[in-house]
Image (cartoon, rainbow, N blue to C red):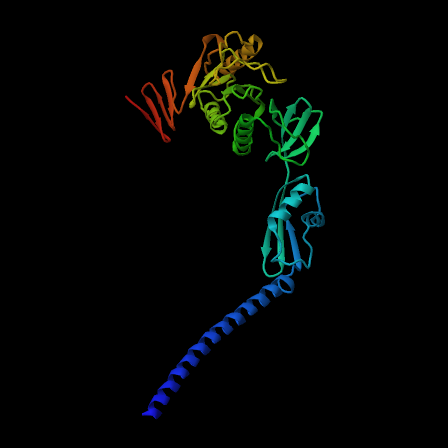
Length: 353
């Protein structure tokens, strides 16, 4: 009986030792895995994935590929794992004035691709200290004492820090919002070009077009939508080719007239018309520009004579209103056109008999 009891005790001790060995084995395996991972990471950040090739692409007549690489701070032999693309991209933009954008990609295991886009002069911003030349994305390229011909001129923006190489900004949040939408629209819109914008009063923004028409946009909000609506009005066959005045009525209506107490042609910024708390002009009567009104009237009448089509002059107070709608016997509504008993709907034309 004693021998049996002794055997049972030995078996119990043996099971305990086996469990202890398994626990130690698990710890050992975990330590080995951690050591291997640490070694692999160390090797990756030191010996593996080192940069052997740096490629540069993108049109840039101002800088060589070597100048762009040097501006990025990336060197052959640098570790690809340690490379911070965002930091290198910003370094290029800060050091190279005429680079609009930079994109850096890692091409494993040992290459880097740098793609740059050059700045293209796109706007003049006239302010009390001079005239800023801006790129399409609003980067200041120069602070000139003159206006660059052929580019739109923006008045009344009030830049806060007019330093070449920095993006333009203003402390007036309303004007900043309007300007951001304006350059977005100018970059994407096709049609009649904008020649000048006066945002001296952000509640009464005035846009002048290259065809001589003037657009009283109103407030700083929804600038992109308003410009698009104005283009739609001017491109409409009933208005196309005429000079006149466009005015926002409310938030989604735009009227067109050849005489409607026109604002002054934008050149130097003028004293803005008084507005109420909602940005609506207060008593705009008396702002007529007789010389400009006569010019529009003569131009539109001459168009009627040359083209064999009758146009109404300024004295007729001819008007169309657009709102996604079209009033005064003719209506424009999301691609649908109605005139008395003639209908235009999604490219189809119908006439009732």
